[in-house]
Amino acid sequence: MPVERERLDADVLIVGAGPAGLACALHLTRLIAQHNAAGANPEFSAENIYVLEKAREIGAHQLSGAVMDPRGLAELVPDWEKTAPLESPVTDDAAFVLTSANVWKLPITPPPLRNHGNYIISLNKLVKWLGGLVEKSGVNLFTQFAGRNLIYEGGGIAGVITEDKGVDKEGKPKDNFTPGYELRAKVTVLAEGPRGSLTKEMVNRLKLDGLNPQVYGIGIKELWEVPPGRINPGYVAHTLGWPLDSSMYGGGWMYGLPGNRVSMGMVIGLDYHDPRFDPHEAFQKYKTHPFVKRVLEGGKLVRYGAKTVPYGGWYSMPRQYVDGGLIIGDSASLLNSQRLKGIHIAIKSGMLAAETVFEALKTGDASAKTLSAFPRKIEQSWIKKELWAVRNFHQGFQHGLYAGLFHAGMQFVTGGRGLIDPMKIRPGHEEYHKLNGKEPAPVRFKGDGALTFDRLTDVYHSGTRHEEDQPCHLIVSNLDVCATKCVTEYGNPCQYFCPAAVYEMVQEKGLPKLKINASNCVHCKTCDIADPYEIITWVPPEGGGGPNYEGM
Image (spheres, helix red, strand yellow):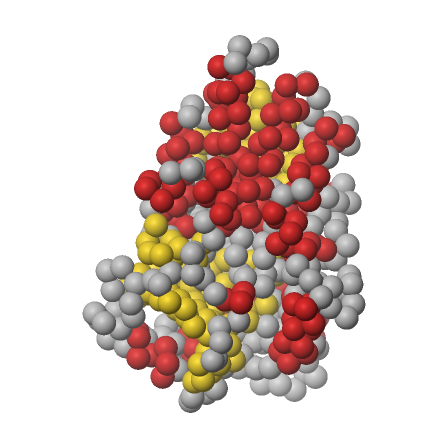
């Protein structure tokens, strides 16, 4: 029998309480307040705006480097310098090239890595603060609720169904079973971040793909407390080179925070060739370099996290509007991969979406024709100017570091065009080289427990928690592929690319079998991206599950 669901109707439903979604909600309430104060009709209410957030509290799933360009925040919250939770202004920055034992400081920091005027922040704290402003404005903000399915209507969408709660591993209702809500809205805004599950489904179903497929990187981060004097607050260092080879795209960072803390990590393009490359292991080795070790040695790991980053840029943007719906922020490929910055763009995209949605509410027309004003607003804003100048940036690195640096230089002098425009690219999972069947399985990295760690230790420091007795939220459509074809062709790369030890190949009756440790999942969605056969689908677990990126 079909499940009976309580239906709630709203003017606007925003899925995802990150920078983009919260900026959309906050700006929309201000537009409504101005409209109502002027005595215009019809009158609207902020209470008819719903924001869904799958984390157990606002900000818990927000992970970023993060050095923030304040441009977007300054437009959203004019007194941001007095009220926002900023860790430190950037006081100094530098770029370095690492070999296995040496380090060279670049005499000139490349322009994209210059950060004077920017701020080191905790994205977790920033989003909590924005969430407080949104709640004060009267918006209904629901935590621990994930959008599980879209409601399709005509050629667009009309809302979402939230996940059922209280379902056991076999999919049967438990004593505490509560069916998900049917949330309908005049406009639904998808602000799910990278590889949003609803966005992915809608883009595929309604054929909204951009010129290029989306490509991604994985960012792995740790927050440390270190002995006094190791790094100054406001100091930003970016590194290139070891332990990555010249065929790979990526690098590391260290940011100095107040209170003798350091944010450090590594971001790696998910278009490398070796299916047994282990991003988590590469990051742990990074910390053993003398340049990095001198900062961390004697310190203490506080937090760990991982997330994916959309690298595709302008040419990977999906169509961002349908009847009744918009896609914003990272879900819409609105990130500058050259600068590794997207918070300011996400905020601005949320504001432009709010203006588009408000016009739809006033006219009573939320058709695709009306909502198509959103991409036009993007093109008329500074978002277009910033992203157009780097429209071919990541594509230039598809043949390695040196070719990428050459292309980057050509693009710099030609305003983003380079030698080829548009430059095409393939999905990252198509870049794996097949194995010849003779390679021995790599020895798994264990760490020393002081400077370097295995993945389970890091997962513990992510604060990840899931209800154990629930359906697996990592859906593998054909397990036979994992135990046969993938074993010989790629050596089961899910064991290596996952930074949380979710996927494990075990022996059962002498045959290989995939074991999924779903409770370890930190919601980075790398598996949904990097699986060579595209048979893994990440869907939201029961609301409230996942990491807790406190202070990250």
